[in-house]
Image 1 (cartoon, rainbow, N blue to C red):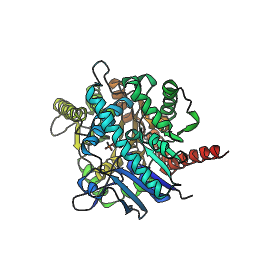
Image 2: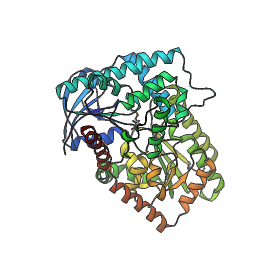
Image 3: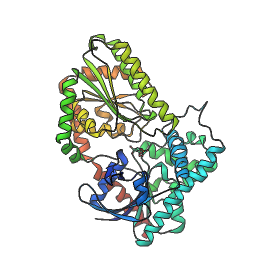
Image 4: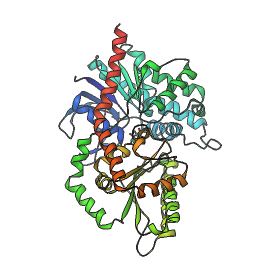
Amino acid sequence: MRRKLIVVSNRGPVTFQADGSERRSSGGLATALRSLLRYHDVTWIASATSEEDRARAGTTLDQTAEDGSPYRLHLIAHDEQAYDWYYNVVANPMLWFIQHSLWELAYTPKVDRAFHTAWRDGYAAVNAGFAASVLTELERDPDTAVFFHDYHLYLAPRLVRDERPDTTLMHFVHVPWPQPDYWSVLPRAIRSAIHDGLVANDVIGFHTDRWRRNFIFSTRELLGEDVTQKTVTAPISVEPAEFDALAESDAVLTAERDIVARRPEKLVVRVDRTDPSKNIVRGFRAFELYLDAHPDMRRRVGMLALLDPSRQDIPEYAEYLAAIERETRRVNDRFQENGWMPIELQIDDNFTMVVAAYKQFDVLLVNAIFDGMNLVAKEAPLVNTRDGAVVLSENTGAHAELGEWALNVNPFDVAGQAEAIHEALSLDLGERRRRLEAIQEYVRGHDVSRWIELQLAALDRVSATARR
Ligand code: F6P
Protein backbone atom coordinates (compact mmCIF):
# COMPACT_ATOMS: atom_id res chain seq x y z
CA MET A 1 0.00 0.00 0.00
CA ARG A 2 1.36 3.43 -0.97
CA ARG A 3 1.36 5.73 2.05
CA LYS A 4 1.70 9.41 2.70
CA LEU A 5 4.77 10.03 4.84
CA ILE A 6 6.64 13.04 6.12
CA VAL A 7 10.24 11.90 6.58
CA VAL A 8 12.28 14.07 8.95
CA SER A 9 16.05 13.73 9.21
CA ASN A 10 18.93 16.10 9.75
CA ARG A 11 20.67 15.08 6.52
CA GLY A 12 18.54 15.12 3.41
CA PRO A 13 18.79 12.86 0.37
CA VAL A 14 20.77 15.40 -1.68
CA THR A 15 22.77 18.59 -1.22
CA PHE A 16 22.60 21.31 -3.85
CA GLN A 17 25.97 22.37 -5.28
CA ALA A 18 27.20 25.78 -6.45
CA ASP A 19 26.57 24.81 -10.10
CA GLY A 20 22.95 23.89 -9.29
CA SER A 21 23.57 20.12 -9.49
CA GLU A 22 22.54 17.75 -6.70
CA ARG A 23 25.07 15.73 -4.73
CA ARG A 24 23.69 12.51 -3.33
CA SER A 25 24.26 12.24 0.44
CA SER A 26 26.31 9.27 1.58
CA GLY A 27 25.80 7.26 4.77
CA GLY A 28 23.42 4.50 5.71
CA LEU A 29 20.48 6.64 6.78
CA ALA A 30 20.17 8.74 3.62
CA THR A 31 20.74 5.70 1.39
CA ALA A 32 18.11 3.54 3.10
CA LEU A 33 15.56 6.32 3.25
CA ARG A 34 15.94 6.99 -0.47
CA SER A 35 14.36 3.54 -1.00
CA LEU A 36 11.19 4.82 0.69
CA LEU A 37 10.71 7.25 -2.19
CA ARG A 38 10.04 4.41 -4.61
CA TYR A 39 7.21 2.88 -2.64
CA HIS A 40 5.56 5.79 -0.82
CA ASP A 41 4.38 9.35 -1.25
CA VAL A 42 7.11 11.22 0.63
CA THR A 43 7.70 14.77 1.77
CA TRP A 44 11.24 14.92 3.17
CA ILE A 45 12.16 17.61 5.73
CA ALA A 46 15.90 18.12 6.30
CA SER A 47 18.49 20.73 7.25
CA ALA A 48 19.95 22.97 4.56
CA THR A 49 23.68 22.19 4.66
CA SER A 50 25.10 24.21 1.73
CA GLU A 51 24.65 27.82 0.56
CA GLU A 52 22.65 26.49 -2.39
CA ASP A 53 20.43 24.49 -0.02
CA ARG A 54 19.82 27.65 2.03
CA ALA A 55 18.78 29.52 -1.11
CA ARG A 56 16.08 26.86 -1.66
CA ALA A 57 14.92 26.64 1.97
CA GLY A 58 11.45 27.54 3.23
CA THR A 59 9.45 26.31 0.25
CA THR A 60 8.56 22.74 -0.66
CA LEU A 61 10.43 21.65 -3.79
CA ASP A 62 9.13 19.09 -6.27
CA GLN A 63 12.01 16.69 -6.78
CA THR A 64 12.76 13.55 -8.77
CA ALA A 65 14.92 10.81 -7.28
CA GLU A 66 17.64 9.10 -9.37
CA ASP A 67 15.29 6.24 -10.19
CA GLY A 68 12.59 8.66 -11.40
CA SER A 69 10.41 8.58 -8.24
CA PRO A 70 8.80 11.93 -7.41
CA TYR A 71 9.04 13.37 -3.88
CA ARG A 72 8.85 16.73 -2.14
CA LEU A 73 11.79 18.29 -0.31
CA HIS A 74 11.43 20.88 2.44
CA LEU A 75 14.81 22.28 3.50
CA ILE A 76 15.20 24.30 6.70
CA ALA A 77 17.75 27.13 6.91
CA HIS A 78 18.46 27.12 10.65
CA ASP A 79 20.16 30.03 12.34
CA GLU A 80 23.85 29.26 11.74
CA GLN A 81 24.95 29.66 15.37
CA ALA A 82 22.06 27.49 16.57
CA TYR A 83 22.91 24.83 14.00
CA ASP A 84 26.57 24.81 15.04
CA TRP A 85 25.58 24.22 18.69
CA TYR A 86 23.03 21.58 17.71
CA TYR A 87 25.31 19.62 15.34
CA ASN A 88 28.84 20.28 16.59
CA VAL A 89 28.28 20.51 20.37
CA VAL A 90 25.18 18.50 21.28
CA ALA A 91 24.25 15.88 18.64
CA ASN A 92 27.88 15.17 17.68
CA PRO A 93 29.81 14.68 19.86
CA MET A 94 27.74 14.66 23.10
CA LEU A 95 24.82 12.39 22.15
CA TRP A 96 26.83 10.38 19.63
CA PHE A 97 29.58 9.79 22.20
CA ILE A 98 27.06 8.74 24.86
CA GLN A 99 25.26 6.40 22.52
CA HIS A 100 28.49 4.77 21.34
CA SER A 101 29.97 4.69 24.89
CA LEU A 102 32.99 6.76 23.82
CA TRP A 103 33.50 9.18 26.72
CA GLU A 104 36.49 8.66 28.99
CA LEU A 105 34.43 9.52 32.03
CA ALA A 106 37.32 10.46 34.32
CA TYR A 107 38.05 13.44 32.05
CA THR A 108 35.19 14.05 29.67
CA PRO A 109 32.61 15.30 28.85
CA LYS A 110 32.34 18.75 30.36
CA VAL A 111 28.75 19.72 30.95
CA ASP A 112 29.48 23.39 31.53
CA ARG A 113 27.56 26.62 30.94
CA ALA A 114 28.52 26.59 27.28
CA PHE A 115 26.97 23.15 26.93
CA HIS A 116 23.74 24.26 28.63
CA THR A 117 23.56 27.20 26.21
CA ALA A 118 24.19 24.86 23.25
CA TRP A 119 21.44 22.56 24.49
CA ARG A 120 18.88 25.33 24.93
CA ASP A 121 19.71 27.72 22.09
CA GLY A 122 21.06 25.08 19.71
CA TYR A 123 19.63 21.57 20.06
CA ALA A 124 16.24 22.59 21.47
CA ALA A 125 15.93 25.54 19.08
CA VAL A 126 16.75 23.49 15.98
CA ASN A 127 14.33 20.77 17.10
CA ALA A 128 11.66 23.45 17.47
CA GLY A 129 12.45 24.55 13.90
CA PHE A 130 11.97 20.97 12.67
CA ALA A 131 8.70 20.65 14.60
CA ALA A 132 7.42 23.93 13.06
CA SER A 133 8.19 22.63 9.55
CA VAL A 134 6.42 19.35 10.29
CA LEU A 135 3.35 21.29 11.48
CA THR A 136 3.38 23.38 8.29
CA GLU A 137 3.45 20.23 6.15
CA LEU A 138 0.69 18.66 8.29
CA GLU A 139 -1.51 21.67 7.67
CA ARG A 140 -1.28 20.93 3.97
CA ASP A 141 -2.12 17.28 4.48
CA PRO A 142 -3.29 16.36 7.98
CA ASP A 143 -3.54 12.57 7.54
CA THR A 144 0.11 12.05 6.81
CA ALA A 145 2.22 9.95 9.21
CA VAL A 146 5.49 11.51 10.40
CA PHE A 147 8.69 9.45 10.41
CA PHE A 148 11.53 11.02 12.46
CA HIS A 149 15.10 9.78 12.30
CA ASP A 150 17.97 9.61 14.70
CA TYR A 151 19.62 11.38 17.60
CA HIS A 152 19.43 14.86 16.10
CA LEU A 153 15.66 15.01 16.59
CA TYR A 154 14.83 13.67 20.04
CA LEU A 155 12.83 16.72 21.12
CA ALA A 156 10.79 17.35 17.95
CA PRO A 157 8.17 14.56 18.37
CA ARG A 158 6.89 15.93 21.71
CA LEU A 159 6.52 19.42 20.20
CA VAL A 160 4.51 18.00 17.30
CA ARG A 161 2.46 15.75 19.59
CA ASP A 162 1.43 18.73 21.78
CA GLU A 163 -0.05 20.47 18.73
CA ARG A 164 -1.39 17.42 16.91
CA PRO A 165 -2.50 14.77 19.44
CA ASP A 166 -3.96 12.50 16.72
CA THR A 167 -1.16 12.43 14.20
CA THR A 168 0.73 9.17 13.81
CA LEU A 169 4.39 9.66 14.76
CA MET A 170 7.25 7.21 14.54
CA HIS A 171 10.95 7.53 15.17
CA PHE A 172 13.84 5.33 14.14
CA VAL A 173 17.04 5.44 16.21
CA HIS A 174 19.92 4.51 13.90
CA VAL A 175 22.55 4.38 16.66
CA PRO A 176 22.99 2.07 19.68
CA TRP A 177 21.03 2.71 22.86
CA PRO A 178 23.44 2.39 25.81
CA GLN A 179 22.74 1.00 29.26
CA PRO A 180 20.61 3.29 31.49
CA ASP A 181 23.53 4.33 33.75
CA TYR A 182 25.54 5.73 30.86
CA TRP A 183 22.82 8.37 30.33
CA SER A 184 23.69 9.80 33.75
CA VAL A 185 26.47 11.70 31.97
CA LEU A 186 23.70 14.20 31.23
CA PRO A 187 21.83 16.23 33.88
CA ARG A 188 18.47 14.67 34.73
CA ALA A 189 16.35 17.37 33.06
CA ILE A 190 18.17 16.85 29.76
CA ARG A 191 18.13 13.06 29.77
CA SER A 192 14.47 13.07 30.78
CA ALA A 193 13.61 15.46 27.94
CA ILE A 194 15.34 13.12 25.47
CA HIS A 195 13.36 10.11 26.64
CA ASP A 196 10.13 12.10 26.91
CA GLY A 197 10.54 13.39 23.35
CA LEU A 198 10.96 9.85 22.04
CA VAL A 199 8.00 8.39 23.91
CA ALA A 200 5.76 11.02 22.31
CA ASN A 201 5.95 8.78 19.21
CA ASP A 202 3.54 5.91 18.53
CA VAL A 203 6.37 3.64 17.40
CA ILE A 204 10.10 3.79 18.19
CA GLY A 205 12.38 1.56 16.14
CA PHE A 206 15.85 0.11 16.81
CA HIS A 207 18.18 -2.10 14.78
CA THR A 208 18.50 -4.83 17.42
CA ASP A 209 16.80 -6.23 20.50
CA ARG A 210 19.90 -5.23 22.47
CA TRP A 211 19.43 -1.46 21.80
CA ARG A 212 15.66 -1.75 22.14
CA ARG A 213 15.93 -3.46 25.54
CA ASN A 214 18.28 -0.76 26.83
CA PHE A 215 15.77 1.89 25.75
CA ILE A 216 12.92 0.09 27.54
CA PHE A 217 15.06 -0.09 30.71
CA SER A 218 16.17 3.52 30.65
CA THR A 219 12.66 4.81 29.96
CA ARG A 220 11.29 2.76 32.83
CA GLU A 221 14.01 4.10 35.12
CA LEU A 222 13.79 7.75 34.09
CA LEU A 223 10.12 8.23 33.34
CA GLY A 224 8.57 5.27 35.16
CA GLU A 225 6.88 4.23 31.89
CA ASP A 226 6.77 0.86 30.21
CA VAL A 227 7.14 1.50 26.49
CA THR A 228 7.61 -2.11 25.40
CA GLN A 229 4.49 -2.10 23.22
CA LYS A 230 5.61 1.00 21.35
CA THR A 231 9.01 -0.33 20.37
CA VAL A 232 10.02 -2.43 17.41
CA THR A 233 13.23 -4.12 16.28
CA ALA A 234 13.78 -3.51 12.57
CA PRO A 235 17.34 -4.02 11.30
CA ILE A 236 18.20 -1.60 8.49
CA SER A 237 19.54 -3.10 5.30
CA VAL A 238 20.52 -2.36 1.71
CA GLU A 239 19.04 -2.63 -1.77
CA PRO A 240 20.92 -5.63 -3.26
CA ALA A 241 19.96 -4.75 -6.86
CA GLU A 242 21.66 -1.37 -6.44
CA PHE A 243 24.94 -3.09 -5.52
CA ASP A 244 24.62 -5.67 -8.31
CA ALA A 245 24.29 -2.86 -10.85
CA LEU A 246 27.09 -0.78 -9.29
CA ALA A 247 29.46 -3.75 -9.23
CA GLU A 248 29.17 -4.07 -13.02
CA SER A 249 29.27 -0.33 -13.78
CA ASP A 250 32.11 1.05 -15.92
CA ALA A 251 33.33 3.32 -13.12
CA VAL A 252 33.62 0.47 -10.60
CA LEU A 253 35.24 -1.88 -13.14
CA THR A 254 37.87 0.79 -13.87
CA ALA A 255 38.56 1.33 -10.15
CA GLU A 256 38.71 -2.42 -9.63
CA ARG A 257 41.32 -2.82 -12.39
CA ASP A 258 43.39 -0.22 -10.55
CA ILE A 259 43.14 -2.20 -7.28
CA VAL A 260 43.91 -5.51 -9.03
CA ALA A 261 47.02 -4.02 -10.65
CA ARG A 262 48.43 -2.95 -7.27
CA ARG A 263 47.01 -5.45 -4.82
CA PRO A 264 49.13 -7.88 -2.80
CA GLU A 265 48.30 -11.58 -2.74
CA LYS A 266 45.93 -11.09 0.22
CA LEU A 267 43.93 -7.93 0.83
CA VAL A 268 42.38 -6.81 4.11
CA VAL A 269 39.85 -4.03 3.49
CA ARG A 270 38.16 -1.59 5.83
CA VAL A 271 35.65 1.11 4.86
CA ASP A 272 34.50 3.67 7.41
CA ARG A 273 33.84 7.29 8.19
CA THR A 274 36.75 8.68 10.24
CA ASP A 275 34.69 8.33 13.39
CA PRO A 276 36.13 7.35 16.80
CA SER A 277 33.32 4.78 17.13
CA LYS A 278 34.74 2.88 14.16
CA ASN A 279 37.89 1.88 16.09
CA ILE A 280 40.23 2.46 13.16
CA VAL A 281 43.36 3.08 15.25
CA ARG A 282 42.95 -0.22 17.13
CA GLY A 283 42.38 -1.94 13.78
CA PHE A 284 45.80 -0.77 12.56
CA ARG A 285 47.36 -1.91 15.83
CA ALA A 286 45.75 -5.34 15.37
CA PHE A 287 47.16 -5.53 11.85
CA GLU A 288 50.58 -4.64 13.25
CA LEU A 289 50.30 -7.48 15.79
CA TYR A 290 49.29 -9.83 12.99
CA LEU A 291 52.38 -8.85 10.93
CA ASP A 292 54.53 -9.26 14.04
CA ALA A 293 53.27 -12.79 14.63
CA HIS A 294 53.40 -13.84 10.95
CA PRO A 295 56.56 -12.48 9.38
CA ASP A 296 56.07 -14.87 6.42
CA MET A 297 53.01 -12.81 5.45
CA ARG A 298 54.90 -9.51 5.18
CA ARG A 299 54.99 -8.38 1.51
CA ARG A 300 52.16 -10.85 0.77
CA VAL A 301 49.34 -9.07 2.60
CA GLY A 302 48.17 -5.47 2.74
CA MET A 303 45.41 -3.44 4.31
CA LEU A 304 43.42 -0.99 2.18
CA ALA A 305 41.64 1.56 4.39
CA LEU A 306 39.09 3.71 2.54
CA LEU A 307 38.02 6.36 5.01
CA ASP A 308 35.49 9.11 4.46
CA PRO A 309 36.55 12.25 6.40
CA SER A 310 33.71 13.04 8.78
CA ARG A 311 32.56 15.89 11.09
CA GLN A 312 35.90 17.70 10.98
CA ASP A 313 34.59 20.85 12.72
CA ILE A 314 34.43 18.82 15.94
CA PRO A 315 37.81 18.68 17.75
CA GLU A 316 37.40 15.02 18.80
CA TYR A 317 36.95 14.06 15.14
CA ALA A 318 39.83 16.19 13.84
CA GLU A 319 42.08 14.64 16.51
CA TYR A 320 40.92 11.16 15.60
CA LEU A 321 41.76 11.69 11.92
CA ALA A 322 45.22 12.88 12.97
CA ALA A 323 45.61 9.75 15.13
CA ILE A 324 44.63 7.57 12.14
CA GLU A 325 47.31 9.23 10.02
CA ARG A 326 49.94 8.94 12.76
CA GLU A 327 49.22 5.26 13.38
CA THR A 328 49.34 4.45 9.66
CA ARG A 329 52.73 6.18 9.35
CA ARG A 330 54.05 4.37 12.40
CA VAL A 331 53.03 0.89 11.20
CA ASN A 332 54.19 1.57 7.63
CA ASP A 333 57.47 2.97 8.87
CA ARG A 334 58.07 -0.12 10.93
CA PHE A 335 57.37 -2.75 8.26
CA GLN A 336 57.69 -1.23 4.79
CA GLU A 337 60.29 -2.80 2.53
CA ASN A 338 61.16 -2.81 -1.17
CA GLY A 339 58.14 -0.76 -2.16
CA TRP A 340 55.67 -2.81 -0.05
CA MET A 341 53.57 -0.79 2.39
CA PRO A 342 51.41 -2.71 4.84
CA ILE A 343 48.66 -0.05 4.99
CA GLU A 344 47.29 2.00 2.11
CA LEU A 345 45.23 4.86 3.49
CA GLN A 346 42.81 6.78 1.29
CA ILE A 347 41.00 9.65 3.03
CA ASP A 348 38.25 10.40 0.57
CA ASP A 349 34.51 10.09 -0.07
CA ASN A 350 34.80 7.82 -3.12
CA PHE A 351 31.98 5.30 -3.31
CA THR A 352 33.17 3.92 -6.67
CA MET A 353 36.47 2.92 -5.09
CA VAL A 354 34.59 1.52 -2.08
CA VAL A 355 32.51 -0.85 -4.22
CA ALA A 356 35.64 -1.91 -6.14
CA ALA A 357 37.34 -2.72 -2.81
CA TYR A 358 34.22 -4.63 -1.68
CA LYS A 359 34.72 -6.88 -4.71
CA GLN A 360 38.38 -7.47 -3.92
CA PHE A 361 38.67 -8.14 -0.20
CA ASP A 362 39.98 -11.41 1.24
CA VAL A 363 39.21 -10.13 4.73
CA LEU A 364 36.76 -7.36 5.59
CA LEU A 365 37.59 -5.79 8.96
CA VAL A 366 34.64 -4.27 10.86
CA ASN A 367 35.83 -3.75 14.45
CA ALA A 368 33.61 -0.85 15.62
CA ILE A 369 33.57 -0.03 19.35
CA PHE A 370 29.79 0.23 19.10
CA ASP A 371 27.74 0.65 15.94
CA GLY A 372 23.95 0.80 15.52
CA MET A 373 24.13 -1.50 12.51
CA ASN A 374 27.22 -1.09 10.26
CA LEU A 375 26.01 -1.45 6.69
CA VAL A 376 29.50 -2.09 5.31
CA ALA A 377 29.18 -5.60 6.80
CA LYS A 378 26.07 -6.15 4.63
CA GLU A 379 27.14 -4.32 1.47
CA ALA A 380 30.63 -5.67 0.94
CA PRO A 381 29.88 -9.43 1.00
CA LEU A 382 27.08 -8.93 -1.56
CA VAL A 383 29.52 -8.06 -4.36
CA ASN A 384 32.69 -9.82 -3.18
CA THR A 385 34.33 -12.04 -5.81
CA ARG A 386 37.10 -13.63 -3.72
CA ASP A 387 35.21 -15.71 -1.16
CA GLY A 388 36.26 -13.13 1.39
CA ALA A 389 35.76 -13.57 5.14
CA VAL A 390 34.24 -10.98 7.49
CA VAL A 391 35.86 -10.12 10.83
CA LEU A 392 33.05 -8.51 12.81
CA SER A 393 32.83 -6.66 16.13
CA GLU A 394 30.39 -8.19 18.58
CA ASN A 395 29.19 -4.65 19.38
CA THR A 396 27.72 -3.92 15.95
CA GLY A 397 24.05 -4.33 15.14
CA ALA A 398 25.11 -6.41 12.14
CA HIS A 399 26.57 -8.97 14.54
CA ALA A 400 23.07 -9.91 15.72
CA GLU A 401 22.22 -10.98 12.17
CA LEU A 402 25.51 -12.07 10.59
CA GLY A 403 27.57 -13.22 13.58
CA GLU A 404 26.94 -16.87 12.77
CA TRP A 405 29.00 -16.61 9.57
CA ALA A 406 31.62 -14.03 10.59
CA LEU A 407 34.78 -14.27 12.68
CA ASN A 408 33.62 -12.37 15.72
CA VAL A 409 35.87 -10.09 17.73
CA ASN A 410 35.83 -7.99 20.86
CA PRO A 411 36.62 -4.45 19.63
CA PHE A 412 38.98 -3.69 22.54
CA ASP A 413 40.97 -6.91 22.20
CA VAL A 414 43.60 -6.08 19.58
CA ALA A 415 45.36 -9.41 20.15
CA GLY A 416 42.07 -11.19 19.44
CA GLN A 417 41.59 -9.12 16.28
CA ALA A 418 45.11 -10.02 15.07
CA GLU A 419 44.27 -13.67 15.67
CA ALA A 420 40.96 -13.31 13.80
CA ILE A 421 42.75 -11.81 10.78
CA HIS A 422 45.05 -14.83 10.82
CA GLU A 423 42.14 -17.25 11.13
CA ALA A 424 40.25 -15.50 8.34
CA LEU A 425 43.24 -15.76 6.02
CA SER A 426 43.72 -19.41 6.95
CA LEU A 427 40.17 -20.68 6.34
CA ASP A 428 39.99 -23.14 3.49
CA LEU A 429 38.18 -22.14 0.31
CA GLY A 430 35.09 -24.28 0.97
CA GLU A 431 34.55 -22.78 4.40
CA ARG A 432 35.08 -19.21 3.19
CA ARG A 433 32.64 -19.76 0.36
CA ARG A 434 30.04 -21.33 2.65
CA ARG A 435 30.17 -18.36 5.02
CA LEU A 436 30.13 -15.72 2.29
CA GLU A 437 27.22 -17.32 0.45
CA ALA A 438 25.26 -17.59 3.68
CA ILE A 439 25.72 -13.85 4.33
CA GLN A 440 24.73 -13.02 0.74
CA GLU A 441 21.60 -15.15 0.97
CA TYR A 442 20.65 -13.62 4.31
CA VAL A 443 21.06 -10.02 3.09
CA ARG A 444 19.13 -10.70 -0.12
CA GLY A 445 16.29 -12.15 1.95
CA HIS A 446 16.37 -9.28 4.47
CA ASP A 447 16.75 -6.20 2.29
CA VAL A 448 15.82 -2.58 2.91
CA SER A 449 12.21 -3.04 1.82
CA ARG A 450 11.82 -5.49 4.72
CA TRP A 451 13.18 -2.83 7.10
CA ILE A 452 10.48 -0.46 5.90
CA GLU A 453 7.75 -3.13 6.03
CA LEU A 454 8.58 -4.10 9.65
CA GLN A 455 8.11 -0.53 10.79
CA LEU A 456 4.94 0.09 8.85
CA ALA A 457 3.51 -3.16 10.20
CA ALA A 458 4.28 -1.94 13.75
CA LEU A 459 2.54 1.31 12.92
CA ASP A 460 -0.54 -0.56 11.70
CA ARG A 461 -0.59 -2.54 14.93
CA VAL A 462 -0.62 0.58 17.11
CA SER A 463 -3.22 2.30 14.92
CA ALA A 464 -5.45 -0.79 15.16
CA THR A 465 -5.04 -0.82 18.97
CA ALA A 466 -5.89 2.88 19.16
CA ARG A 467 -9.08 2.33 17.14
CA ARG A 468 -10.30 -0.51 19.38
O1 F6P B 1 22.90 6.86 12.18
C1 F6P B 1 24.12 7.40 12.01
C2 F6P B 1 24.26 8.13 10.70
O2 F6P B 1 23.15 8.92 10.44
C3 F6P B 1 24.53 7.19 9.54
O3 F6P B 1 23.38 6.69 8.97
C4 F6P B 1 25.33 8.01 8.62
O4 F6P B 1 26.27 7.22 7.96
C5 F6P B 1 26.02 8.99 9.51
O5 F6P B 1 25.37 8.98 10.76
C6 F6P B 1 26.05 10.33 8.87
O6 F6P B 1 26.51 11.30 9.69
P1 F6P B 1 26.52 12.82 9.26
O7 F6P B 1 25.16 13.14 8.73
O8 F6P B 1 26.88 13.56 10.50
O9 F6P B 1 27.56 12.92 8.19
